[in-house]
Length: 148
Image (tube, rainbow, N blue to C red):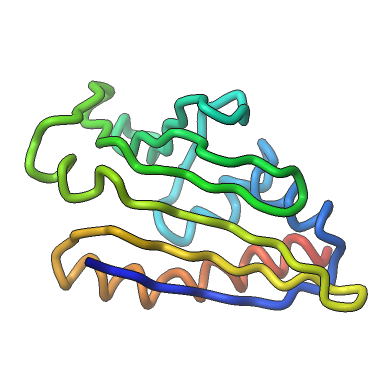
């Protein structure tokens, strides 16, 4: 089971970092590192479903476990989106179901320390290596956008 943690210090307030993470216009910018055309569909309320998609009807299905504005967001993975169809039962869906993606924003003087914790993912080594390599790049893009 994968447990990864990525951290970055951003020269912006927690509010600005939060709005950059989840903003309608900024989310697709920093997540394009993973997949061009990335979208997120949710109402951002605790207990609500989240569809993380790639613009081609593929992606992940999650639920918001915790949402403390400007401080903490926790997603629990439920399954996959394949050709626009929600899948909770295939092998791949079962590999990600129950995994968590947690975002914690901590004040650091007039800056913000963003910590992203990924846990419980049961993925192939190639995909794990991809995430390990790509997350730091995505966070650098996020930092650039938040500091503008």
